[in-house]
Amino acid sequence: MDARLLDVLVCPLCKGPLVYDKAAQELICKADRLAFPIRDGIPIMWEDQARTIPVDHP
Image 1 (cartoon, rainbow, N blue to C red):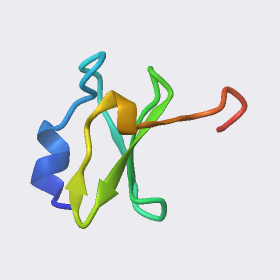
Image 2: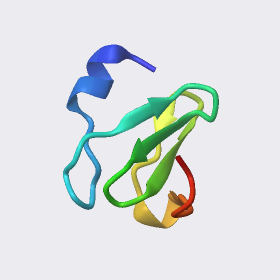
Image 3: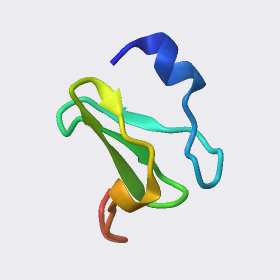
């Protein structure tokens, strides 16, 4: 994932910062508890494609 792209991408719902999880290939919004997938190097920033992160997840 390009570091410059990470600097400009925000959560499409709350416009908050995203955390890159390299191992899972996801961009995580901690505020909305959503993980947006990265497929073939392209972040998929659609809410219906995001995985909900459980409340007990660190």
